Every structure is written in structure tokens, then in C-alpha cells.
Image 1 (cartoon, rainbow, N blue to C red):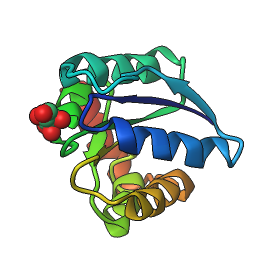
Image 2 (cartoon, rainbow, N blue to C red):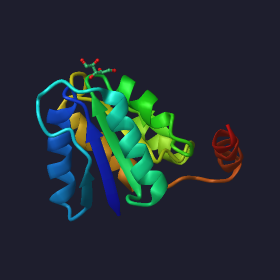
Image 3 (spheres, rainbow, N blue to C red):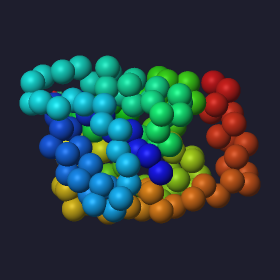
Image 4 (cartoon, rainbow, N blue to C red):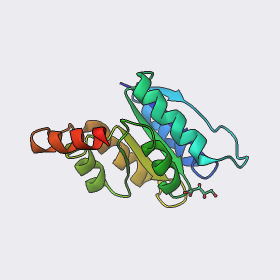
Length: 143
Ligand code: RB5
């Protein structure tokens, strides 16, 4: 699996830690920036990650900003993206099972790195349940 990753300056530190965590497991990462502490605009990076997933350059994406909120809104503007902001492991599990979330968002200033690793692992390991949830995902995709 190839994961596209993107952040603004507020999410940079956590992006780097999760990137390392994934690469240590042999997971390929497409790093779309940002790569410095200089202030940047999260919509640019959320859009880039969403487009990487929808174009097939990556299988799924993970985005970060200070809270995870702004960049999740940006990623969700890309048609076909279902980006879920997760702050705990049950959210990561349920958004894969029920929403087939193809992008995960987390906050670099609100979620500690150990929690972020646990959220990421659950989100990677959990399959979409399909069934009645497929109809709802189809409805999202038509919006
Ligand atoms: C940047 O200061 C901050 O607004 C951004 O990282 C994010 O938290 C927005 O939702």
C-alpha cells in the first residue's frame, strides 16, 4: 500500500513522526509537503493529498494540520475523498468499517504521537464492512 501524506506547518512534526512509523513497516510514502516550519496554507496541502488519492498516485492519504480540522475540510472538497478526522482508536476503526475513509486526518497540536501511531495502525488494518454501508458511501460519492 502506498500512502500520500501532507501537512501544513502545524502538522509537520506529527507528519514526520508518522512517516517514519510507516516507513519502518515497509509502507511506501508519497510526501507532498510541507517540509519546513514556514507558515503555509492548509487548503493547498489537503487538496494535493486528495488529488493524489483520486488520481491513483497513492492508495490512501493521511493529512495533518494544527487541529486536523482545516486540512480535513480541504481534503473533503476533492470529489471521491472521504476524509475522517480521528482523535482516538475507535474513531479510526469505525470510519474504516462504516465510511470507507480513504484519507485520515490528525492534529499535530492536539494528538500526541503515540496516540497518532495507534490511530494510524487501526485505520490501516481495518477493512470496510460494505453491506448497508456501501449504499451510504455511494450516496456520499454522488454528492
Ligand atoms: C495554522 O495556524 C492552523 O490554523 C492550522 O494548522 C489548522 O489547525 C487549521 O485548521
